[in-house]
Image (tube, rainbow, N blue to C red):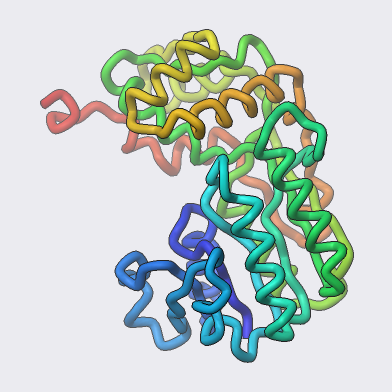
Length: 293
């Protein structure tokens, strides 16, 4: 039995769909069954309700599990506590192997709290005695879909990246890697880094959007404080906005600029280009009567 935690978030949902594509059985963990309603009619998907921070709620979810995927909400305060709590519960339940979604460049001394927490979790998992695999992806292409409102309204997107390069990955390529690791053997004690096939500046991304949309899209380089104000105005909690800005600070130093395709080559996965990603989602950025209204 394979358990997927965080199964109703961006990565978790994509991974569940990857298992559905292969008609394979999987168990998913959610804190609220209502969030998993889209999976409830699939006989191959078993839904377990529990909270990773409350081990006493995880007995049914962990019963009989051989491998577990470690995903959780990007909580700037409780992510490490949440995932470490799950690791401890999984060990107690006899889980053999945990596959963790991490990040590029985890470091317990990093100025970015998410990089510190991922490093702390990785170390705890490695010390647990269970088999482990760390999957470390670059920034997701899907994050640019969040810029659709300003692309629609102002033909612009606003990010504090200066002229730094970044090589984002399509989350659907990432979950193919997870699927291979979870359904084949020989990945214990290994770390897989991966990015997309294109290292680009924000101006390059604007050019890709412009070409796909048939109109000029502008990249506006904002200050970190402007980005923080924008995120908070969108409803993001202040601590999370600060944590996002810390990641942008690292990315401006080129922390995610390298093209890392060895994992995809190893597993026979053709990486999605950014142009292909935009073409697949072009309708989100297209102006319609509804968008103008």
